[in-house]
Length: 242
Image (cartoon, rainbow, N blue to C red; front, side, top):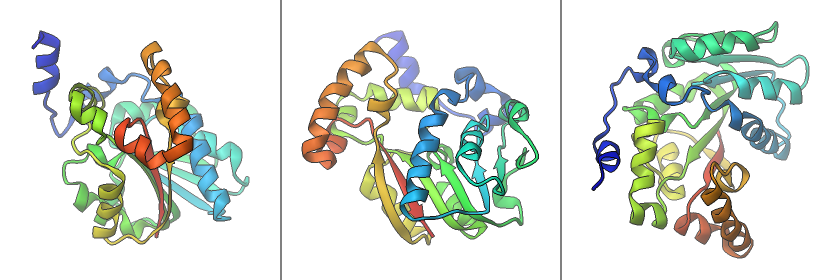
């Protein structure tokens, strides 16, 4: 085992890496580059169900760019609020705030506030007590949209390194496939209304190797998308719930 492999294998996480700045040191952009694509997936779900919420909140909003992108695609009277426990991410949000887009450096679970739509995008896999976290969010909005990475695929389990990379770099503490992601929401009291896969590895390949791997994913997904997700991975799940 190489020294880099050893670091990945034994990388641990302080509960406060988001407050201390350790996370932003590893991910300095806070994934802003993915925000237009993620916002498009959310708009796809809202349009599919003809939902036009007047108040939208995002928990774990990072740099706030997803909300900024959504603001451009939704009616001008919509009010947006982003909650973030990381002071470093909160600082990044400030350049995006305006009269209809507000940010708070606070834990939404502890706040007595309610919205028509809550967004929880690539968040609860980072939370140590993810079941308690989900139960705490349940009454904060009438509708919820979750984006959940599906880290459990045959390829990733076989290779191991990609999962440990997500743990070391992205801070994932829990790993899901479609069935366990949906069961987690149902077990914590949510009613799942709809879901679809989002092909992040195809839409946003991060290397030449990833670009090459996106071709078989694209071709095979036209035949059997469930099988491609289960075997090759590279997908997330977007879920609409009540």
